Image 1 (cartoon, rainbow, N blue to C red):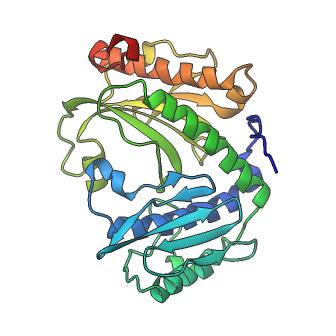
Image 2 (spheres, helix red, strand yellow):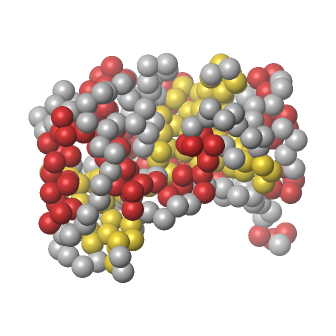
Image 3 (cartoon, helix red, strand yellow):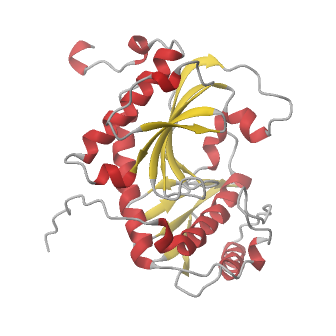
Length: 310
């Protein structure tokens, strides 16, 4: 049988339609992410804890374990979590509406134990308004497959655009990856210069993430502050006059984010445009140029030349 890859269609993703399923998915990603955090060797700016897009959903990629390795995949195509190791048979956890986060947590601990993986995580949600430990979270048990697959479809598309944009930069750049604390897909560019020291009261998370000058770009499905899917970009440290720079397309705007300007483009505005891909690339480039100009980055030195000029 011959298949034809479907043409990209950007579906609607109203937050209110899948908010409980979104939180269930978010908590599952946090559990998987915390397992990776505990076992992975450290890498700069927390890059070692993130999850990555795959052909079926999200993956930890390979996690070293002794002389071997294993990987956890959140398969959104078939609604299951897969644990693949180099020494044992694959084990799975099926995901369905009605299965609580607490139930999932107990199952994944059991499956890891079955293949001989011992890991002790801080079993509480990070930076979420939930006080219970993972094993006691029963209020989130929602798996609306229609909206979860809409989200996954959008994330696949965004992943490709961010990778294209990332390839235009010659400086230090993180992979396109998912930070599970906020469930946003991001890519970050670095100028190569150190940032001013953060206050002593700043968290270790902030100190390692913002040790150097960055311009960061991403997409998230919405939260209490921005209750709709959106693309964003910000510069750190935030330079004076950043929000005076022009953004593209015209529907993009600067908003205040904890006292600093953040560029914002709403997903619903983008999906109505004639060429969403070019519009998103334009937004990312305009936000980069704005931050790089005001922060005095050497954009010519950091731009990727065409191959015929090399």
